[in-house]
Length: 112
Figure 1 (cartoon, rainbow, N blue to C red):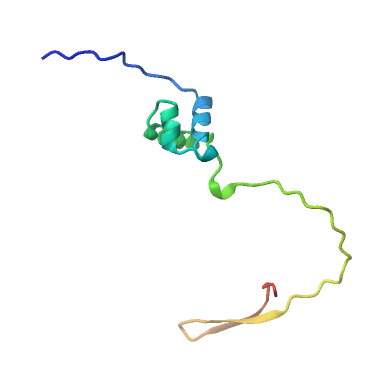
Figure 2 (figure 1 turned 30 degrees about the vertical axis):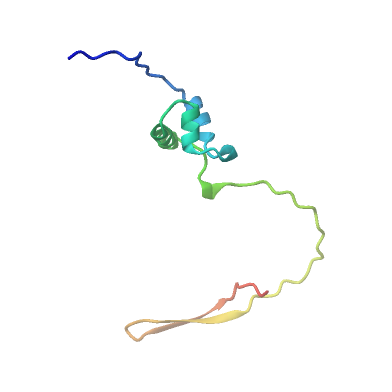
């Protein structure tokens, strides 16, 4: 049995910059991993592998929980006031041995 050659096998090389652009385009304007993969003629798994590889190299995007946004607030002058000490609350720790530790700690809760 003889196999027919259906096309030329290709192996593309992608630079880290190209990988960063492709991985970074996921989520932009609502683009899914599948859509980005189809747009660049690669597999979804390739995008996940690149994301992992770039993260290991320290080139990946920041984690979702570590996104910082710049905020601009107008300047407001506040008259200085005397600081009031925070009220203290008793804290008691009862150990299984019957011993007890008592301490008064500052209450840092904010009253509404």
